[in-house]
Length: 275
Ligand code: KIV
Image 1 (cartoon, rainbow, N blue to C red):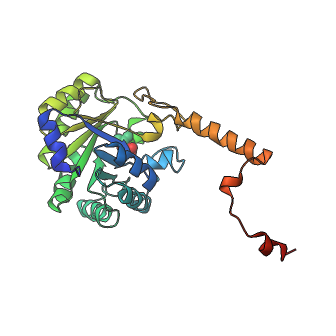
Image 2: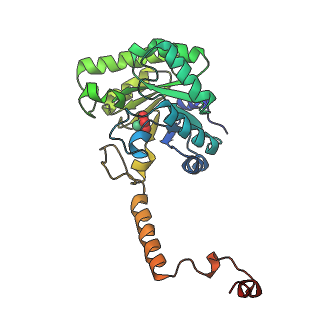
Image 3: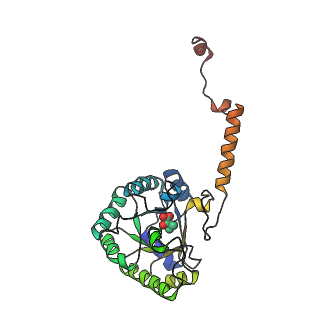
């Protein structure tokens, strides 16, 4: 069954958990889709894990559209959410609607995600009015890295926790279909989850959220630059890949790959005529 904003809302109402993983290309999207994950996020984390930037700030609309299109071709039942990159919506409500529209029309996503709370309520309202579902993103919002002074847990003081609750209510009121809560204390995420009617998707926000999201390179141990505290490595795929690359080098050097079964034949009479 195709996952949509309607089915994820129903999941919250039934008390069923929602699963989301990032993907940035066709083959990974296909694997995730076939595994039965509810949502794929084409995150602007692609800037870091796919393109090698040190943060997400350099990601462009063209990058996002290119990767979203590839993911959308592999995602049959999974709902595809595309991140709005830095300065694709902060500049004006008009820009926000146009760029969200491009991610839907050109990228073939089913929803967009943008970082920010109350201050972007008008943007969220305008995008949803254009029939584009919006996932909001609160807590540690990596596009505000320079304003935060680093990747830090958010909402720890009373004032910060109140602001996060207010932001969550504001984005719901503006029409957001779900909210990602990144790096916020588990008890605060639980409270937000109780107070909102729309689903919360946590990353570093504890088990009390309606769903969870992880970057696939993190959960498969494929990204060695750093490992956030909230990441669980469900498999050591990075190590398995390296082992396979070493075996390949060995076999190519030893002449044992390619073997007969990997090789195409030509009739002896044909090849003899060439000598
Ligand atoms: O870009 C991304 O992958 C994200 C997740 C970390 C939620 O925003």
